[in-house]
Length: 200
View 1 (cartoon, rainbow, N blue to C red):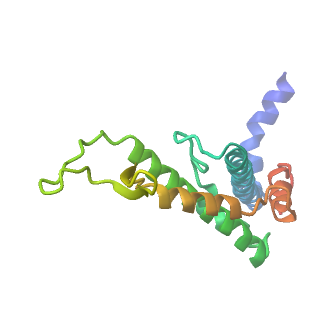
View 2 (cartoon, rainbow, N blue to C red):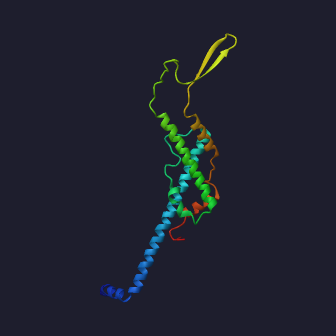
């Protein structure tokens, strides 16, 4: 017990006599913590990006199977790629970055189309105004004539303002390139699985 107390009392003298060594150790530890924090942030960002790509592709596959998106869901609830792209510039080639950029751009565009359709469907119904001169609803109509009875038959087709939006949504969804099982995303997966002692 006395030996331990003597050792504790000598610690200040030991530190004063070895200021250079102590400064070096403190500096080394600070640099290590900085590099570790940076690496942890990069690894966590890679994991989030992998999750976002996997989830978006799952939603698009469902659309291709069932022909519609769930309007309350978004393909990219978050966009970690745009926020963290700078972290992966050294790890990915330009073509790799372009491929991921393209996937995120199209997924974001699909989200915009889904939101437009959702906004339109949730608008309160507006009453149809009848033009005073024609006394007909302002909707598209096509006049067909029955040749046997010589009677004009009017086929009324409601105007769908979302028809073009639906077409664009379908085109973009069918032409999006899946990347989750590609070598590009495998590089991100390797980054996401690096251990704490891998500082480079």
